[in-house]
Length: 466
Image 1 (cartoon, one colour):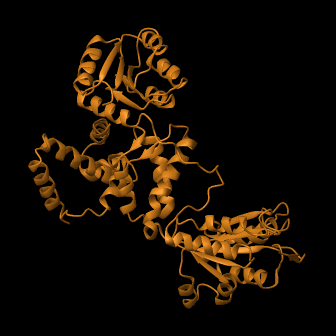
Image 2 (cartoon, one colour):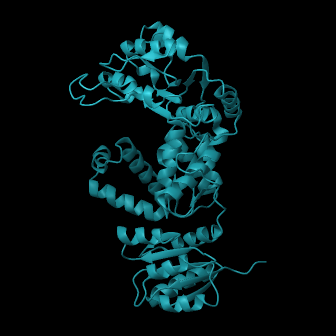
Image 3 (cartoon, rainbow, N blue to C red):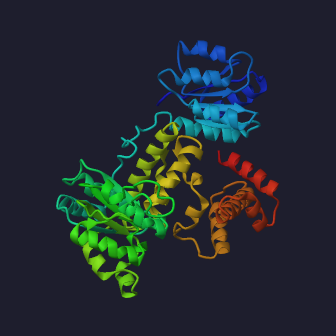
């Protein structure tokens, strides 16, 4: 049987030390009290605790100074910072110096014990997976659909053939284009990307083919277009389905004979460029409607590679989420975090309409905002939870609530009324904020309450979650 964990409590307030130490002792741990940071630092020369609670503002060295000293030594152990001054600067400084979590005073002893239990469970975090350097991240996946895509890229990359990449928005079509270029004979030459939907139609021709000085108002000097920039390399044309018909004719000539003129120019230029195009649209349907040239589609669609939607490769979600979270934590300069098994199960069950891009953005958000080192289901956005299939729960929310209450009453769960009200309130607040892009005044108006009420309830909701 392992020895109980040792937890140090550093606070100049005797009452806080006594009640917190008593609660920790009752939970089965061995607390040790210190009146100031200097005493704790002196004790660290002989031994280290499994967990440490520290106040921020104390006579002598502050809790942040203590945290800074602890973060510089080994072995590391989690630190929970307590303070009645819950300002942004203090909490940000605590996390910046490696705090496990921030506990605002006054706090509920049950919350403190729960936070200690969570910290001890994560005291030795799993090593973070290797993360590719920025700009070097490639395709990730081990699902059958992705393995088939990897095989196709391997076959096509070295061929030099034109490729049309299809797939929903956010699936990673540009990563496929990068992989095709990286594994081709043109790898040492430029990879130039252009999103045709992001450039105004009147400027797109100049962006592609360049222009001569004086070709139009504002053209003060010669401009080399993307075809010239990609010479002997690869030109990636994203969202090719949005290209205007008139410009499609010019592009077709380049693909057919490898020649073009700059806008306003008379010099015939040769183009030694491999063109890879991508779209989320049905180009065959656009051809039928007369919105896309059939002959251009035939030129682009020599080889077609389809990137599966994330919902079609649910087995890759955990792998992607772990990778994105590790990279996001490193980029934000925060301690490494990980997903709990339950949180990963929720992520895998979600439909991900925004695909991999949506998952990556979520991981960036959680890396900064989620409390603690482990991301649990409660840290996930309510909109994501609401769209996750929930077996054995009726479709009508009142029936679902009734079943939820029945199950917990049968299990003898206490304070059920308060739990239900808090959960309902949190769902309403988060749903209203999501519906109004985080705008608190608009969300408050939609719920029929005041903006200050929304702000106050969000604060109390976050404290309960922590």
